[in-house]
Image (tube, rainbow, N blue to C red; front, side):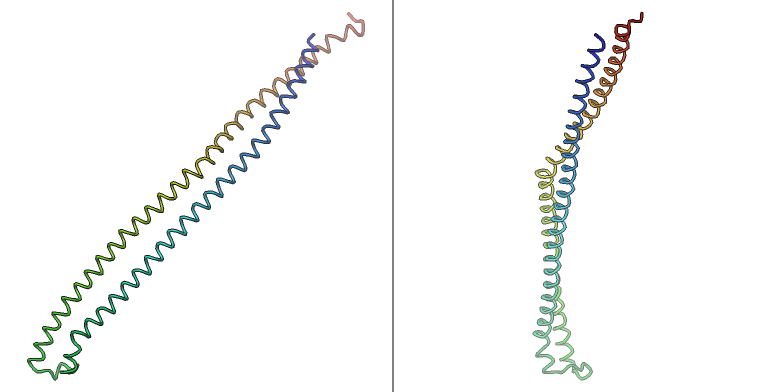
Length: 203
């Protein structure tokens, strides 16, 4: 009886081991694919984030440069409009200016400095607005990246985690099935030995 039970148990345990090993191969393949998909998705998201951030910074740099150029042109135009007629009348050599010219030059200089300060203040305000806008855009990029991770990356990680748990469970099941196989194999051997006297006639 032990021989038959052992043989049958060994057969079923062996079948179970093979089934579990086949499932393990499938799970390992799916796990490798899931891990690869996660790596590719992370690379894609990081690449998009870099591209958006670089484009935003490049656009901001171009705007700042354009504003600075505009300010320089404005100051040059302002200087020309304020001092142009004065230089036409008195020339550029201040050693030849009379008292009236020097007084007028001082007044024009004060006027220029006031208007130039207003222009600089306006430039500073616009720069601050641009910096605030850039921070808001950066936050939007970060929000977009988080949304992408939540919608596309997290589900992949959930799949990977489930597969990893199944792999660990299969490893335990295979180990137990192999132990059952070995136990049934030993039972079959023991049963076979107990049958020997029946066949040989030895008591």
